Amino acid sequence: MAAREEKIPIAIVRDQLKNEYGTTWMAYYDIRKPSSLPHPLLLLNNESPKVCLELVQPLDLPRLSAMQGINHRNIMCIGALTEVEIGEQKVKLLALFLDHHNGPLGVHLDSLQLHDNYGVVPSQALRDIIRQIICGVEELRINGFYHGDLSLINIFFSKRDVLLIKLFNFRTKDIPKENAQLEDCVAVGLILQQISNELKLRMPQLIFTLIDDLDSTLMASDVASLHTVKEIALKQIFFWEPRRRRIFWMHDVPKALEKHAADLIIRTHGWILPWNSRIHQGLLNEMNAYRRDEEERKNGGVKVKPEVYKYNVHDPLQYVKCISGAYTHADKLKARVGKILDNFGFEVTVDKAVQENDPELFIVLYKLLRAEVSGSIYFAVSSSG
Image (cartoon, rainbow, N blue to C red; front, side, top):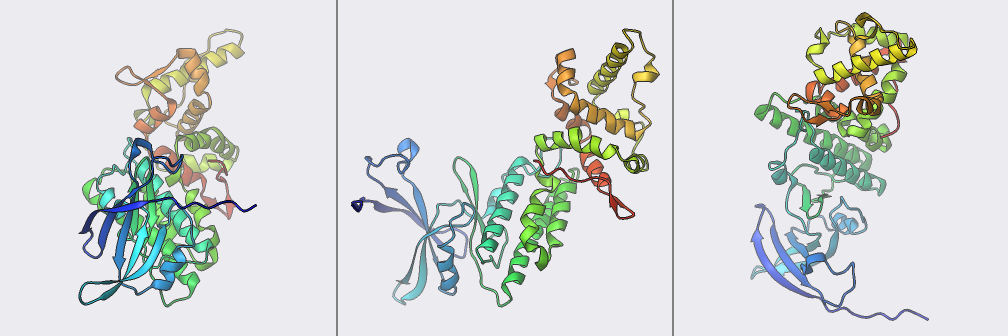
């Protein structure tokens, strides 16, 4: 027996109509739905959902129609598309009913902190934004489309419970499809470069290594690697969060140090020595004490000399081993002393203690351990995280 269909009365009431961005008219509408509609059709707080109506020139109707077939959180959803005639001149325009949004992303970026609390670009917010842009570009590619004009002006955002990125304002280009898709990937790199350059003018003291590395990676893409751009990009340390950084110190670094050549690479880098000026002093003291206790335990309680257990602050390899050991034995350190304190007596995690004092350390070390000598890579990125 076929299911019975019922029409649900929905009233659309115009809320406001104005020229928001200088090039298009935007109308915001309240959609009034019956209160009897079950969850999830009813919104929380009894708020009426909003949709946007944009009027654009009918220059690219085929591509706009195609966008209706892609259902992805980072692609602007066109709920309805129709031709209309406006005014006495009967100017033909396209009326697009869109997902509700808050305008171009460039406007929103000005209100965001784009670096983390340790002075490293990106912040978590910027990391999430760029990840969504890359996912949107990849979704277009695997569906056989491309954006054609990717920039901060043509990327919109919607801010409700979470920040959502929406790719929109697609353009047709008179070049092979794969070339246009490649231009999309390069355009993401150019967006990162634009963000980085503007930040460097305002806050030159920040650390830009991660954002600059990612924009270089994306701009070096080629047609043959299009199918791997997303995977390669999202593995960049730009997207690392604290958990992935812990894996690096606890797994990747010890594995790399099994190779003798890694010792040489680390020791010949131009570190500023002694390195104890860059480490959290409480963390160094606890690691020295932990090594002392371990050595004495192995020797049946016999006390050992400081030169046996103390880290050599003039040896950069000892610095790397100290930090790696701190991450690896974080639980034992906490069990032994209860907590690690900062200069003001507040408890800090190992990760915070390291990042506050030397936020570039893991970046430099990661790049060093990926160095190629005689065609041999001494360090492989873990697939986790």
